Length: 239
Ligand SMILES: Nc1ncnc2c1ncn2[C@@H]1O[C@H](COP(=O)(O)OP(=O)(O)OP(=O)(O)O)[C@@H](O)[C@H]1O
Ligand SMILES: [Mg+2]
Image 1: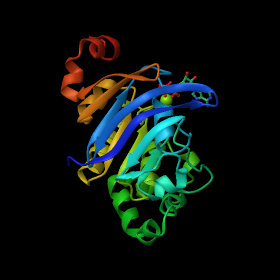
Image 2 (image 1 turned 135 degrees about the vertical axis):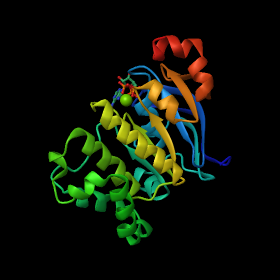
Image 3 (image 1 turned 180 degrees about the horizontal axis):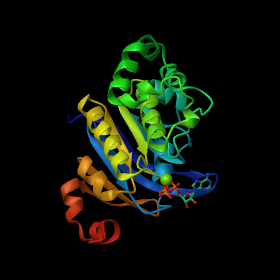
Image 4 (image 1 turned 120 degrees about the vertical axis):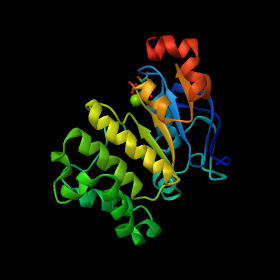
């Protein structure tokens, strides 16, 4: 539980010449949930994109499972166990639920070999997807699409999931289901780095958190500490 699975040192990055993330330092330990809190445009999605290789860092280092993976390509990072559930879900709308899951499993020979076993696991985690197995992903409800996006990422057999705004656009009861599943995923030993607008909910789920403002980490601590932090209370918890 105490081994860092992800260590980020002085990471900077952005888009072209535009720097968005400044000297980011953070750690995620094996099997823990850590959240990243920040206002719109603070750099949360960009942080996840840098971690999963979708953007190339300007400087700094990303170590994952003891290996420096800075500047690795996204497919190689996913194969090595870090999988991104993107903001907006990015499903293959004209493919069925099952086909989307197969795309996840296709990331490595090991994941492909364990495809049926992992599929049983994700169908168990999200029973509604079993009923929808042959339905086109584009025709699913928003909640079902979010579940499928998480399930597809789990098909890669990750040790760390990066999850961006899972509650976006969903009714509270559906969000409850998604968060319950994330808790179960953690109980199965998968660490989660979570970006979530619903700060109260994400601090309840996570062990620890970081606060990002204008691309800088401005606070960090256990969830209990952050919930008592005056700045966090004022800016994100509206109390
Ligand atoms: N593809 C891009 N090209 C140029 N600038 C971008 C691009 N994507 C994001 N940005 C800029 O980077 C900054 C951080 O954006 P980012 O999407 O990381 O924020 P965020 O914290 O995820 O916000 P939100 O809560 O709205 O999702 C913003 O100023 C944004 O305009
Ligand atoms: Mg974002």
